[in-house]
Amino acid sequence: MREAPDDQRWFSDDPKAAADFVRKLIGSASERVLIVDPYFDGECLLRFALANATEQVEVRILASKMGLLFGARLPQPKERCATCNQPIGSTSPPYVRILEALAVDLKKVRDVSTEKHSDNGVTIRVMGGRKKSPIHDRFLVCDGRVWLLGSSLNELGDRGTLIVRVPRPDEILRELEEEWNKAPPLEDALAQARKEENEK
Image 1 (cartoon, rainbow, N blue to C red):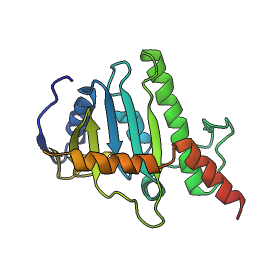
Image 2 (tube, rainbow, N blue to C red; image 1 turned 135 degrees about the vertical axis):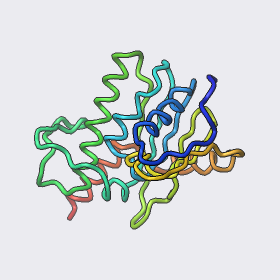
Image 3 (cartoon, rainbow, N blue to C red; image 1 turned 90 degrees about the vertical axis):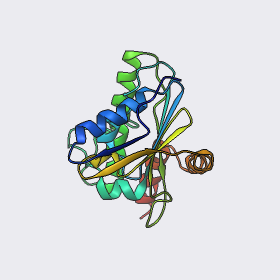
């Protein structure tokens, strides 16, 4: 395990410094990274998923259905779905279009990752929840070290926020792994969303 940066940092009105700090934390991992952020979207994926250039570092991302519905970008008209290669239709409901766009972004990240070195296994899972995400807080886990992020990565550092390393993370790690295991992979969440829409 490589040495990680400071265990506590405050950021305000400096998104670049905050993003650089998180990217440095991700880059410090030698085995695995878990990003838990209910509002994680395609832009976050492109900014953070490739921050670790070490071969074989597993990068897992746990987003949420409600967060994607609330804050994710809608795809551009010419984009194609990464799972079925069909154009992302403007007639599809927003959640399906958002998942399709996230799948496109995940494919881009996997393609770049494969060019740089063997695929590091970037995986996204989507937590359910009818009205709220099962997890409220945002976490970054690097090789068993856990940081609590005071805001979502999509607005990190825009306003005053704290990133702090959790001193005794065992219980948190167990809970995060439990939620990870319950959440479907992005591809399955997209298939389910399409199925539900077709049944309406």
